[in-house]
Image 1 (cartoon, one colour):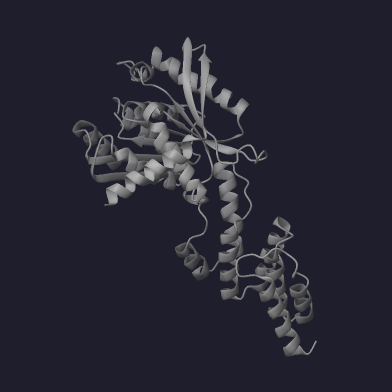
Image 2 (cartoon, helix red, strand yellow):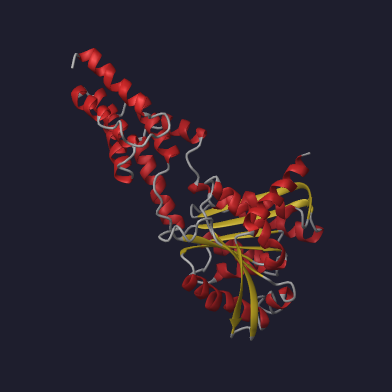
Length: 381
């Protein structure tokens, strides 16, 4: 039954993304030919004219694009990952030539070098000119193209920050080079690696050895995830790995979870400081300057009330008012802080003054009226 649900989820996700797919042709001087692209823009891309998005480049776009586009659309709809621009390159007739490397140094050569340069020198300038992109880029591939994607890690300033390796067909020296590059990285890098019990035996053997090596690395800039799925085959493991990879890469973006809330509540540090740090991390890692989400305001507000940290609750209220002055949220946190620190008359006026603002979660007009009335009753105002 779970297989049926998995199929349906992928199928409907693909249908959601299909209507948004743009088909483009780019003329490449380096390749001496045109290349077909599939591009999925986020929902409401045109309406959100001030918003910029990460790019997820999918090699083997002729068959990998749809599952990636569907998953990105689905997860971003629920705000578990940010909205992103998904780009697939059709390689149905050229993947062998595109991924060619020489048998001496084992680096891209001839047609492989041309394709490597095409992505950096022609494709991304095209994307950056025509779409609103951040500087956070993800690359994904399967067997040959997964191995090829890793060559970008060996440049001084890699074009990509995140690498999704779906059952890579590792070239000679690749494991050693990956270990060195990921060990030495001084900026955040995400590396996802997947195989399965029924994967191609030779690929699986080398992938397991690579994981054994990478799992020993101790580098705070490396975000590494390995999955070894039970039962899937070389092609079916893709459906299992894509959501896992996306969740890992964008882990820091997620709204505050229940477990995270419990940790914030129990920690010595202020929940308010945790919130500001979280959004700075999102900005620094992904290039996204997003407003604080209601879920995160509520989680931090509740934690501050639990800790009776009224000064930081007032800061939270000011932040909420700055972000959305027409919402009751900021007024409630400031009024609550005033009330708990003995400034009851000011608190009452703040509660009363927010009746006509937008409601937010449990903070409704009736709720704010009751808060004001309770103060009046208790203090005789």
